[in-house]
Amino acid sequence: MLVQRLGAPSDFDPLLERVRDARIVMIGEATHGSYDYYRLREQLTRRLIAECGFSFVAVEGDWPDCDRVHRSVVAAPGGATEPQTALERFERWPTWMWANAEVARFCRWLRAWNLDRPEPARAGFHGLDVYSLWESMQAIFDYLGEEDPASLEAAQDAYRCFEPYGKRVEEYGMASRFVSARCEEEVVRLLARTREHAVADGPDAFSAWQNAEVVAGAERYYRAMVAGGPESWNVRDIHMADTLDRLLDRYGPDARGIVWAHNTHVGDARATDMAADGMLNIGQLARERHGDDRVVLVGFGSYRGNVVAAPRWGSPAEAMIVPPAREGSVERRLHELMPERAVLVFGGDQPGWVTDSLDHRAIGVVYDPSFESWGNYVPTRLGQRYDAFIWCDEATALHPLPALAMPGEMETYPAGV
Image (cartoon, rainbow, N blue to C red):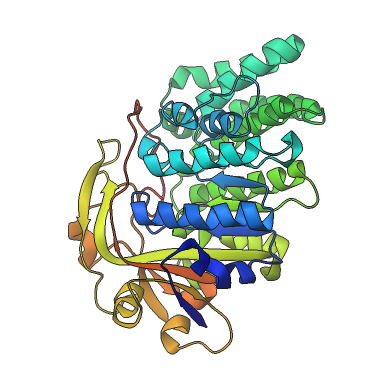
């Protein structure tokens, strides 16, 4: 194991050496609301794009919202000239995950970097998630209305199937226990029609196909959600892994992708108690599909600090105090052993606390610090879950942008990741 104190972006050199032959680098976060995670992730990502030739960033966000950001950062026709304008249009709660000053700063850098390059060499920004059923449906309408009005019927049939449940598509999941799978059939038909167009050479056709995949994934997700257990979590992470693979195919045989998502999605589930519960995640799937040598998983953690989160699902975000990590945790051990900031690159001889199962803190968009004594931790074998780990002894709260927050869909375990 190699430990490098972090003080400047150049201190990531040992980690860049580790990712030299990787096709996928996934960079996590222990919360969705810590400035330090976003800032350090940005510094590492800039180097991956500028020095290692990575092709795109794919985040734990909705495809339609992120597509507006993508069009801005690659300077596509009709895209916003200021990426923050696109980020401020994020509406689905929790908006602060991506509509924040830290992501805006990175996207401004990415746009400036892209403008110095020919269009085929520009690095993109995309969403992996499955929640944007209605927004994706509208995007499909917009595309088919211009490119293939004859295919609108398939989209309208799918829309009418979900329409009785309004924007609360969780109710569709409940109803699907008692009615036929007609919505599933309509969505499959819509997906088939948009796939036919995806072979066309153009980003709009690909985006329409991806929006159809989101609709299909959302339909499966909400049906699985009402059954309980791990299935809805797995549907979501499989959808994100499939989206990542489609992006790699789209960008070409030499494409390399960066993923930004919570540790709980990035860190290999097989090195946690998630596996015993029948859960998988995108980090595990990427290793299985592409090979351990072609995938680098990077986790984050801190001992204490402040975080932006919400006390209840759908409620406004607020800055909260994160208390010191509990005894016996990864974070407590790192607090005792490491400098204030460091990057750990695993491999070779590793101490017992890296290979043993220890509690590892995971804070979602919903957080109650009083639960620290019994919740918010995932038993983890750190050196198997990640290939590298970025340590911040004390983390501070990020800076949300003004945004119109609409209610968010229900999530699965752990809360809001």
